[in-house]
Length: 140
Image (cartoon, one colour):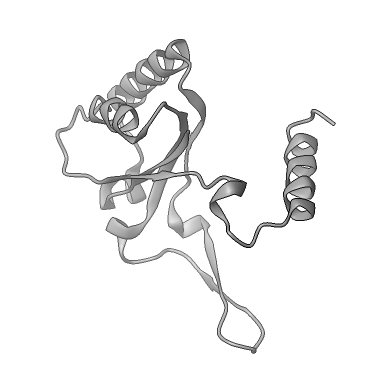
């Protein structure tokens, strides 16, 4: 099973970025997950001041809202994609995540949906999705 681990940001991270200590500890943690074969991808994100939101409102044209966004506790600061046998294994990995400053934080774990999870998935759509995934991964 694949899981997206969504690391929420905080006001400090939005304005000053991670400390050298945090970067070093995260690098070690990422190395542990790579060696264990669970880390598929992971990145930190730039502050919301560099971002935008596209808002869809019914049938009108989408609108764009430029950052920064005010609710930092709801913003994503980074993510991992982990390959784990189940949710419990993923939780155990994330409980080991470094927090050298001892700050309050929140990390959300969500299973990545597979084609079989969608009852309206036709064989044709599943086949197209499979081809597109292989092509985007450079396998086709």
